[in-house]
Image (cartoon, rainbow, N blue to C red; front, side, top):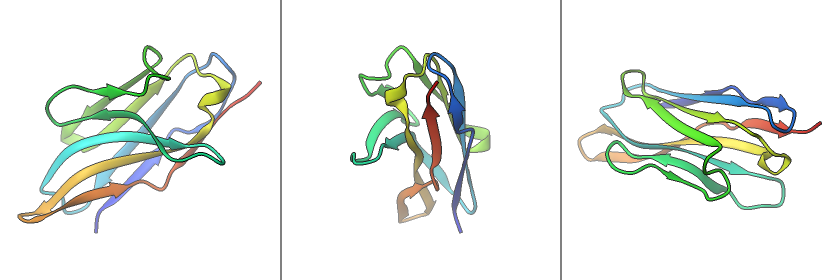
Length: 120
């Protein structure tokens, strides 16, 4: 069974920083892209940052220059460093991983979500 476990959310003041982590565990053969999405109340889930196993990292325009995605492939873990946080960054943040479990079995797996609240 594959699990994605997130941590690092919380309450922070505007201008502050948080670091989210997401670790994938279980019987995993290969890890392709890993990324972060967020969903604010009343809004659709949106991409925040996506880091493929190879190639260019993508960021939402709204977070460019403030958020940084990174990954530790040895630990199957993806991070999201969030700086200069704004109230509009308030949302539940979800990690997503494109995983291959064995030959012919590949799919997207989601974390349980972690709440980020930016407020004074």
